Image (cartoon, rainbow, N blue to C red):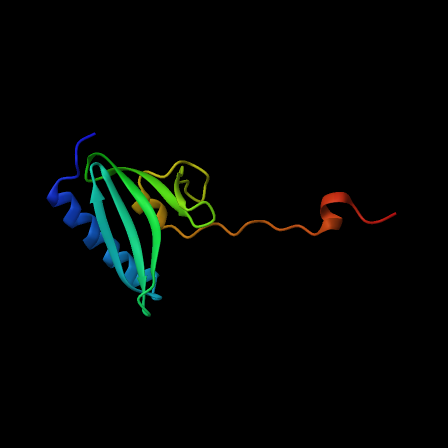
Length: 117
């Protein structure tokens, strides 16, 4: 896959900064570094701590990217299939990030196994 063009790089950071300003008030900055067809996205907290967030894989156009979330437990990026709240694959990482996650259904142990006998 080709390297991410400069115009797309600019678009990525502008869109991420806009999204962070509206949705991630705890972040002071969002940074991107590029390596080949990948964009590595890092959040910077107000105290300067840097947190790896995700990796975008360029798919050949400004609207076609693969997505991998950073796992702090495994210290690596893990490919992710983004889904909308109605469980369909998202059209893009941006589409998924702009949709609120569905609240998981929680059940009490009695609901799962029945009341104690």
